[in-house]
Length: 99
Image 1 (tube, rainbow, N blue to C red):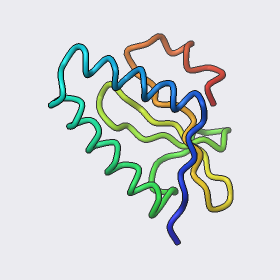
Image 2: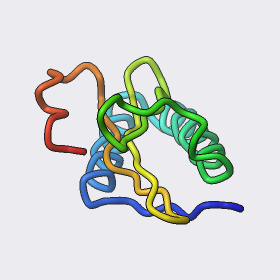
Image 3: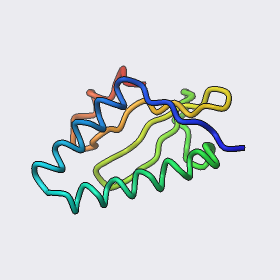
Image 4: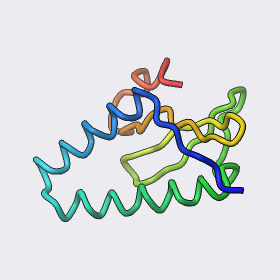
């Protein structure tokens, strides 16, 4: 069974900001490289959402996409809800409340 993806408003906002930053600072090549990595991860999650570890005490899973970017998501029925794309260079307190 292939799962469906659903982006929260937070996840949409995060990805838009990230892509805008990469485009401005690093250009199309870096943007396309990250986009391929994200697509590969999302494809894997759609096939097997249990692939990545769960945060103890929560129903939230996480996937390290790059050393700077982590995706947090949860599973609801046949849907994978993408909660946030978190830039780990931010203060960890900024992550609270995003999942």
